[in-house]
Amino acid sequence: MMNGSNFWVIGGEFGSMNFHKLVEGSAQVKGPFKTRKEAEDCWREVSEQTRHKAGVRFSIVEEPSRVPA
Image 1 (tube, rainbow, N blue to C red):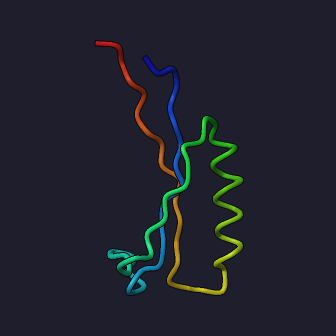
Image 2 (cartoon, rainbow, N blue to C red):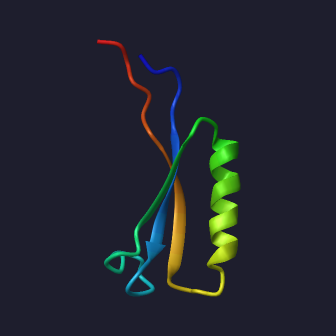
Image 3 (cartoon, one colour):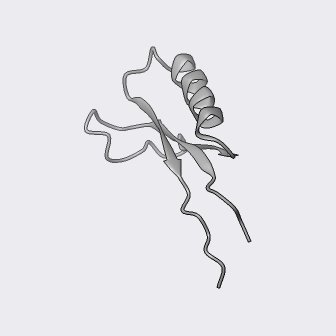
């Protein structure tokens, strides 16, 4: 049984500025992080590293909590 949620930082380079499709091979997944703060720190770091690339975007996603069966 899992308590709480996991957070992930996901993203990469997109083929156009509508941000619908990742460039093949550019996808990145970082995590899991136990707290949103840890995920935000990671997001801030990867965003800073790629700030010069307008087509790169990262997001924080929360994994749903697991409910015991």
